[in-house]
Image 1 (cartoon, rainbow, N blue to C red):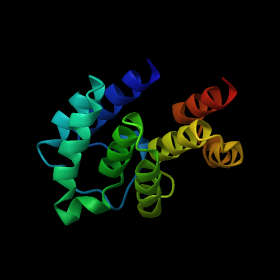
Image 2 (image 1 turned 120 degrees about the vertical axis):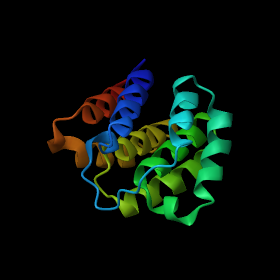
Image 3 (image 1 turned 180 degrees about the vertical axis):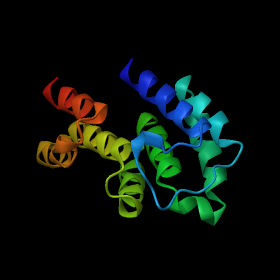
Image 4 (image 1 turned 60 degrees about the vertical axis):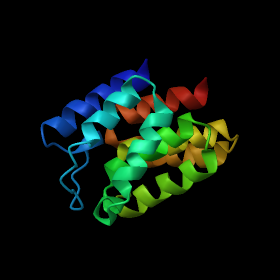
Length: 144
């Protein structure tokens, strides 16, 4: 349920030209028209199709600097159990935008899934002062 709510919120934010996951990004790139379709695929848990579509978007090098697109690509990779590649893509998103709350939450969840609780807790600490949903979600994921 939390993924559904997060994806819906991110979709609405991107449709209104706001910054996904509540970040003020100097790296914001105008999203391609197919991006909203990818968000719908993610919302409908069609992760394989989302991976394929996001890979096509990322063929255009300018989108390789968009932390939101990279975050959704990594999320879809993680949901298809491609954890190694997902982690690399989350790290790339965070190298572009170190405070991207969505990428921080989801890489923290990946750390929990791969039994690296020290990294999950360190990631939680990065979200600690944001007073945001991503902090609460990651904290709950760690404590489950």
